[in-house]
Length: 410
Image: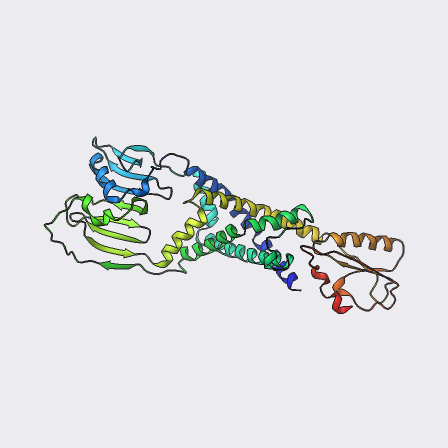
């Protein structure tokens, strides 16, 4: 009975969310391919992990008289928005050691922007985000119910990764691939749900702002290379560094944006003027986005792409299994009190029922008073002369759910 409840829950959740899951899976595969393509251009500089911000800013100022901002993206490509010595605007990827321009900034194509919007909100704005969030949570529930069904099938957690007995391809693929992509799909579901909660501001916490008095004398000026904050900040930890609009103006500041905080820095002496600490929800959002998109690691994004593709096949094989299990319709002409031949069946995937039903039909066609019932429906049959039992185990010898009560009733 418990197995049936989990199976029906698994099926019901899949039916409710199948269309949306199909859309999310297909768009997820496309976005995964795009994320892999993003990493192909050779804009990542070797040994970037050893560079600090002081070294890079000093080198870049020698090449670009006016710098508006420098940024490091999730691929660790360093980009700049600046004006060169000839007065030309420069926007593109650079070598942070020398300032050499490596190539133009990569912009998303119209198609990828369209796919991203479809994946995030179905073009329905807030309503679409709510739908996507709910579907992400349903995917989590589907995964959990699937885990329970595999545990039941394999007769316990310790046999979870044991060999799967192959009944037919759809069933075999559904179980094996489910185990293989269990963790990636769980992560996709959980991070998708969390991002939804953050984006619609159900989870929200204000930033913590700290003002720092200037302990250094106003007339003391330091070179950028000697700013302790810049020296202690690795370039790979940078998100964006905004430069002061007017160089030499004490009221203009560097704005340094890191993953966990934002710092406002005196441009003359490098002292910390203000610090804004991001709340845990913002940090968790950033981590969830990285895990959900795989944008920081090419291997992980490939795994996510395969997991998304696998969800498409999950939906297909799941409905094949359901069709195979429910395709056989039982037609009984006689009641239990009238039947002379009783056929009992125990089946998990419908195969055994199919054969039992063929015998049942032949007996009826021959004029016999045949009755076909599940083994759990066993009772007293006062006129029965013959009792036929068709049953089979599944998984690692587990009894089918519609035969679990037979021994007790017998």
